[in-house]
Length: 137
Picture (cartoon, rainbow, N blue to C red):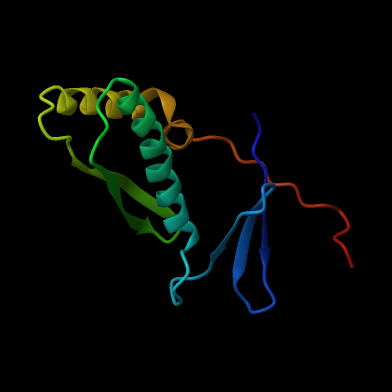
C-alpha cells in the first residue's frame, strides 16, 4: 500500500495538505491557530499508535474506557528535534483486572513493531526530493 499527499500554499498565505480521499488539513507557522508541520508530525506519531492500540486491545476483550496520548518534543537546533515523549492517558474498563497488562503489552509492541510512523522516525526513513528542471510557468 502506498501513500500520496499533496501539499500546497493557499491564496490566503496558509498551507493545506490533501489526500486522495478528499480530506484536508490546514497548517501554517507557529504565529497562527493552525497546526505547524512539527505538530502534524507529533499528531501522526500519536495517531498511528492509538489507532493501532485500540483494535488490538479490544480484540483481546479489553475495551478501554479512554485512550488518548500527549506528545512532547523540544527543538534542540533550528532544524532538529530532541527526543519525543508520548504519554498515554488511559482509563481502564471497570472490573477488568487484566486490562492494564494487556494495554501495556499491546502499546509496547505497537510502538516497536506495528506503527509505521514510529518505525519511520526510529529508522530515519530516506526522503528524496525531486525538483523538475523546468518548473511550471
